Each structure stands twice: as C-alpha cells, then as structure tokens.
Length: 97
Image (cartoon, rainbow, N blue to C red):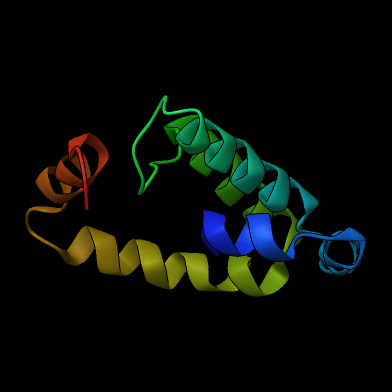
C-alpha cells in the first residue's frame, strides 16, 4: 500500500479491518512513514528502519505458526547461498530501490 492510497482511502472501516487481521501496528508504521515523506524529511520509497523490520519478523515468528514452519527452509536457502553476507549488507545499506 502506498501513501496516496492511504491518504485517500483510510477510514474507520479500514482500521476495523486492520484490527480484524491484527495488522494495526503495520498500518500505524505506514502512516508514520507517509507522514515523514509528506513533510519532506525522507524520499519515497521510504526504507523502514532495521529495528522495525526485526520487530515485525520477530512478532510474526512468535505469533504465526505457519510463518514459523517456513523459517527452517528459509534459513537453509539463505545459508546455501555463497555470497549471502554481501547480498544482505548491500540490501541494508543501499540508498534507493
């Protein structure tokens, strides 16, 4: 979802749907990012802070058994790649997409 969609369609109903799906924190994070872009403090596409991503993945791993079940396969895939360290570092430090 991008900022234009959020600014145009966000309503009480959208918050209710977010609550049903348990994604209110994600919606709050999106609104915060859109506010930062709107005030000109960052460029779009906006990169989430690493601790925000870590918190989201940790919450998903703790609360979602399906996500938890896929983690061993994901780790096996990542560890089988030769230059995974350089790839991850490149994705974390790049300026834009």
